[in-house]
Image (cartoon, helix red, strand yellow):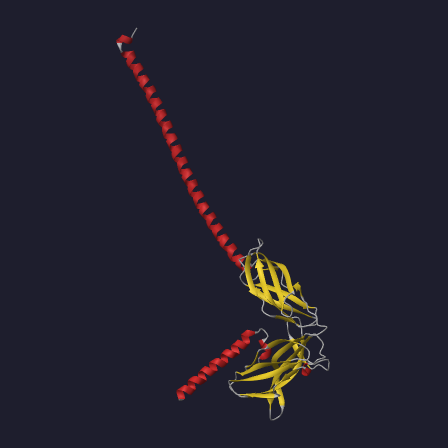
Length: 353
């Protein structure tokens, strides 16, 4: 029995760690749903579309990855974009359909045991007179001292983006600009673009980025994931492409689809020139080494050939000199022979007059 309990506890801990890992990997904004103590809220973001006068029930999961029990204070906050990088800030809106008027969590405080988790439900309720547009709020959690009734640390939690489908709602967005450099020298390639939401609804886009070479052949592709932009805001999205060849000129094509209106398709493209000096340096060094080796071998060959030609020339000159000496010696021998014959003839009586 003791072995069974230990084994079950082991599997429970492994499952808990798996849930925490999934919560971190699932969404890029998971940092909002995590404290430094290892408490994670999953999901970190929820997008809801609702009609006026209707309600939607949702749930979230709070995972305590620490070795101590914790108590959290639950509150509802309004949020707004902090900058174009996607940062947000909590605040409390006064009137005008603040988040507290449409977002209702199940608990005011929640206690979670060590290495344990707690499911919590919440309701999004749109009033009948709620104007058609986008709204943004958050269910925020803070560490809570029950005895002193004080909160501590930075709030974290789940973002809840709501679009109320009523008269007056507008949709639309565009890739305003590409913010990545035209010419890049480092690998991977930085591929950044800014999306502007000109509508009054929460813009949620997803799609693909496709890279082609100058001949139109596809050489790379990746999914952008979910790209969220708040009403009347602009956000810069950053990506990296590491599948580029050693160097080249590419065309980056982005196609995004609005989740609220599937017929709202955003297309844009940009030119990318990739000249990675590190790779080029290695290539140039390799070419230089090959060229140097070729020059060295050519010089050895030329020197050897020059030596061979010199040797041949020396041999030819030696043979020519030898031949000239032989010819000269032959002529001298013939002349000497003639002289001797002439002397012999002069001594013979038959040749005397």
